[in-house]
Length: 571
Image 1: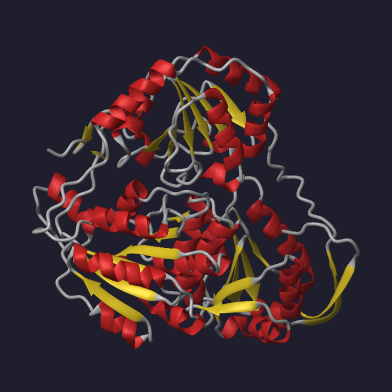
Image 2 (image 1 turned 90 degrees about the vertical axis):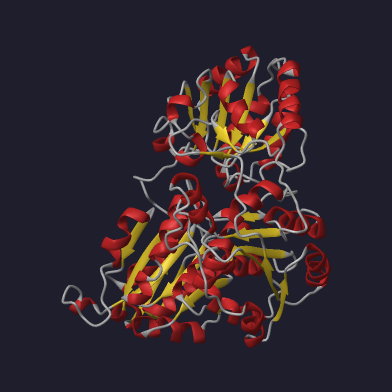
């Protein structure tokens, strides 16, 4: 993001030329998009002022790829789609980015200004549609405003709590020719001033609470990742010997093998993490929003804890969980201040021993049986073994997502890309494409379900076209796995429309896109094929047939507290 230029610049040409040059000023390297009539002037300008463009095969693929790119790179993902159906096909991805705080700048074409509101061909009120699911949106009225609007959009998307910004560009605006427009020197938004530095007195209160505690616990969310604060977090927990748990989106804030890490908390969290929340006396939440999948029944959430909540979004503090010590700040700034203030560490030896005992008594586990076939947990552990925990892993939503969160131990931050708040099927595969473009030298694995993969499988074209070495692992249980699990558990095994009897031959599908495909049905086959696939520098698809009726445990049922888990120990 660039909000200040060394010298004033005069931009000449069409509105579309100014748009593309403004993106170049923002140092945009990749645009994900799909052309159409209302954005043809923009694509014509892109031809004259090249920035790498990734032609997705569906707008949903474009925006999820941009999300993956943004999550891994830390830069805003940039998307272009045409008016009407092109723009509305982006809505799910925009909502997904809003809930998961992913920075995007989304350009939508619009019909000409003179016919807006007349139900013109391919007209949709994208401003009205996206207003509840964007951090901000614009409809451009004058071409001369484009440099300022784009400058503001990147600033808004990237600062404070990150999120998506939509810029709706009528076709006559992008086609308009004018003499010159000024590239702005700075962003001036008096009404938007995110608080980044913590209040000193609140930091002192947090220190006092932590010093006096006997059972402190840190809950780290995606806000730590957005703030690039993982080094400060690790230093803080090690200095004061405070155990840590993660939200789903916070995975990677600490090495998955760290001795103070208790695993993920929440609906499918570990026994140790969930009971720690129930038994702690101080809970320090850094960059997590206390969503319902984390907390379970709020009446049972952290009942004995004094809650300290550090968040850059003041609206999240106290929204769901009463907060004793609110700290509105950037996670990095807050952690640096906590590190700069010397204080007596709490005595956590007894607390850590209890947590260690719980982990030993109630580990994540499953019951393998060669006669049953491949268990999904085994497949995840095999991927972890072959990648050493270093891969960028993307997922859709559902059982495979939870197994990946439980059994893939991340060594580094920004290597876990998943759809959290919205729970979007079809997200994982195109997100892997964006992640691979952001990190071309990293191993990228898309772990997807057979149902979700079929929602965006057309993006296989990009693997073939760009020779992206993404490894696509389909954990194929021939059903809507999490839906089926809930039907088994809460609906007396009435599997209404959750079993998928007809599927494509995924191996032939891969081959149709000139991609190597494999099908594995036993662990012996999986070990050989996975080893070959992960040693390859080419794209690979693996149809991994897993046990259909395997369930994700532990589990906190809806309406229950974190201390009321089912399936904790498998006999």
